[in-house]
Image: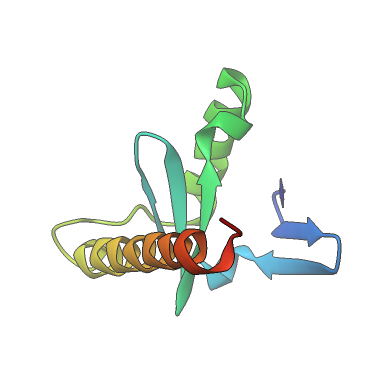
Length: 103
């Protein structure tokens, strides 16, 4: 992932994705992640990927480009959707561990 003043870029072996900051509706910070709301989904950025200085600069960039989710208003729905998505991912992982991996 690359975060710049003009956009957010994700590069993987088989694809590249550029997103303007306008596509992000809000962000929320957890103890280990920064989660960017990009309806109908989201992007999760692990804090451990940054040095202390980089994380500080990234927060400043986010504050300029994206509004902070307000848990008392629209942010609550986002947090509920995030919790559901994480639960689904954990269920899929458990199913893979049980059924798809050799014993």
